[in-house]
Length: 355
Image 1 (cartoon, one colour):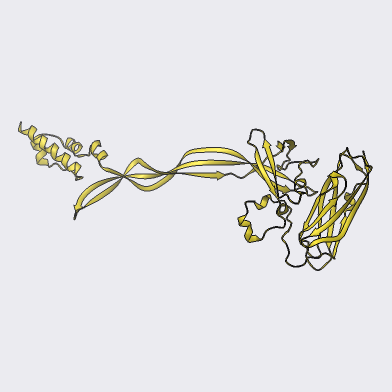
Image 2: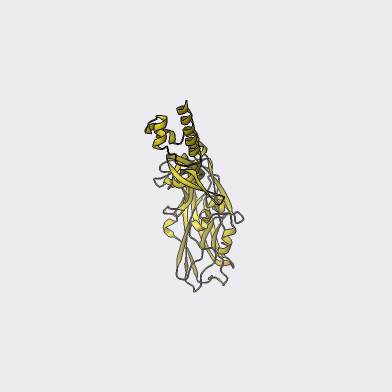
């Protein structure tokens, strides 16, 4: 009876020391009196699962970042480009993969135990719990992969079918895109193009024309990306000059190699205007415009912008006469203007028309 009572007291003492965070010790004298082995006494001295659970578990040092989930989507990327030999604008298409990644930070788990009291403040010891981790805050980030050209694909632009080349450029041999045509009205500053690729959502791409171009410190106030401006695409300078531009020393001509001998209705033909600045001042917002009684020839704009002294600039437009026109001859005049007014130089074109 006495041994049972002594064993009960030892167990109570061990449990009390475990809860207090002290290291339990059982003396040899006690072991001999109650008749238990040292191994059993050691097991009795270890913290039970309940005592560990009751101790504080806190977050330790950062270990790593784990990916919880990854969502992948493909986005159609559209860029305005001038890549053809005749310097006509088109669209360069590519597919861009976007990954939305959800991550979580992983930390060590520390076991905090009270080891004493110092002036009313508890003292703690911290021990790393092997194999146990604490998960912290989550974060979401988007990763954009390099674009891949949409090569040799069938696409639709504003309801019309086109094909792309190996670089993803929309091929337009019949000049149906009409990017420049959309901007021939001087009061129009933007044109939207709806581009569709099979299996992907349609994308609306806006083309802008800011003429004259705004000053550099105004650009940040515009909701119009510069890479979508047709004049920027051509790398033309249409900033208005504060000084009087060159007018008298300009020489205009039609490139004879591009002028057809005969024009056939329903077929496109190119017209390239060349301007050479033989003067001493730069031009400012220099434009050419066609005038004709035939709808397909009237109101086409030629962009030159700022042409420095001694430089030559060229611009090409495509024209098409409707088969419904009943005339057998076409006549067109091209006049020029800049930011200071209308120039006196003009060009004329007079060609036979075949139905």
